[in-house]
Image (cartoon, rainbow, N blue to C red; front, side, top):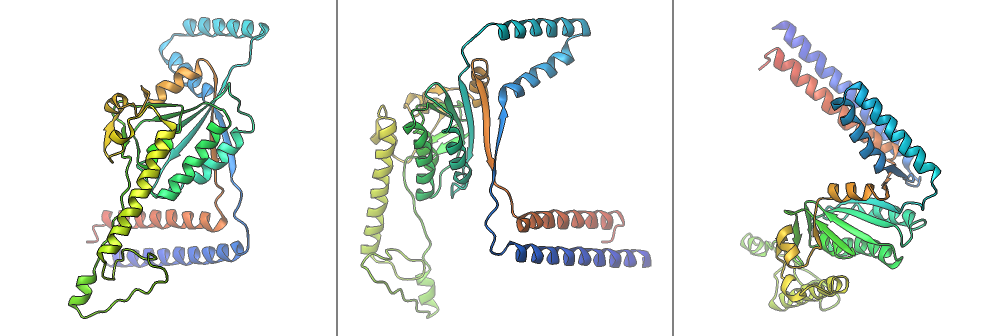
Length: 341
C-alpha cells in the first residue's frame, strides 16, 4: 500500500510538472504571437488519377501471380509508349473541392482561396466538382459561401455538385448553383426555409421580482428578447423579417434552378435523394466516388485543398491538449492496473 501511495504521489508531481511546462510554453507562444499577422496557408494539390491507379495496382499485385503481373505491366508500358508517340489533344481537367459545412460555414475561408487559385487556370473545357456536406446554418455565412461558388459559374467553368449525405437549407443554397447536382440515393436534400428561435425567461424573472429593461433607439432595433417582455408587434415584425429572408432564399434557388416548382418545394421539407430526383432538386443519383472514378477515365482529376497554417500558439495548444490527454490516459491505466480504487 505504501508503494501505491508513493507511486500516486510521483505521478501527481509528474502531471503537475508537465502542466506547468505547457502553461509556460503557451504564454511564450502568446507573447511571440502578439502583433504578428496570421500565417498564410498553403494550397495542396494531389492528382486523383494516381490515387485510383495505385488502388488498382495494389489489388492486381495481390490477385495476380508473377507471370500474369509481369505480362500486364509489359502490356501497359507498350500502351503508354504508343500513347506518348501519338499526338493527342490535352485531356480536360477536373478540379475537386470539398466543403464540410458547420453552422457558421467555416470552410468558406478555405473555399474562397481554392476557387481563386483554380480560376487562374480553369477554362470552359474544364470542370469543377464540389463534394458538399452541410445541414445549413447562418444566413449571411452561407450567403457568402454561395457567392464564392457563383464566381465559378460567372467565369463560365462548368460546376458539378456531389452530395453523399446531406445538403439542406444553406447547404442546398450552395448546391443549387451547380449546373449539375448529383446525389446519393439516400442523401438528405431541401429544407428551403428559414427558422429562428430563442428562449424567453421574462416570466421567471418577474416571479422572482427581477426587472429587466431594454432600451433601444429605432422602433425595430430589438423585436424579440430573451429577458425582456416580448410584444405582439415585435413578434409580427420578427415574422415579417423571416418571411422576407425566405422569399430571398426562394428567389435565389429559382434563379439557378428554374425547372423547380419553387412554391411546392420551398416549404422547409426535406427529401431523400430518390424523392429529390422526382422533385427535380437533383439531376442524377450517384455517389461522388462513382462520378469521380468515371471522370478519371476521361480527364485529369486534381484535388485542391487550402490548408491554413496554424500559429505557434495554436500548435502549442494542440500539443498541450494531446500531451495532457496522454498523461491522463497513462495515469488511469497505471492506477487501474494497481487497483487503486
